[in-house]
Image (cartoon, rainbow, N blue to C red; front, side):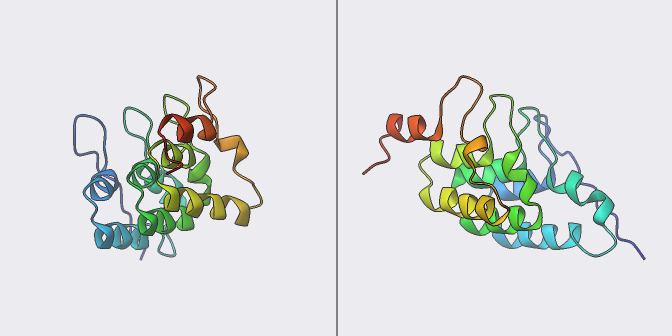
Length: 144
């Protein structure tokens, strides 16, 4: 029997249940949802469910990266590494958002996954206005 889980859109910004669980820092809920979505037999919906976009075209991984939650980044990106390269309306990837918000450990986690997948992450490190992760780190004064 196949388990079909559709990520219900539950608020006016188009956030799905997974977005809300990440935003609320519910690590166990996120892990359980990802496990359900990635169960054998759910391959057809895995990418869509994990990569659901809200109105700003942010995935749940964008939220996890911006919050700097390494456990959720590993959980989501580990299940679907291609999500690291998804651009939101501003051209920001989860990789970029981690740097923009000064979340070093999340940035390094996503960078490691990029390298593991055979990509150095540089193609994910610049947004629509030309700003790079380095620019963002400098502007945010994240060099402590």
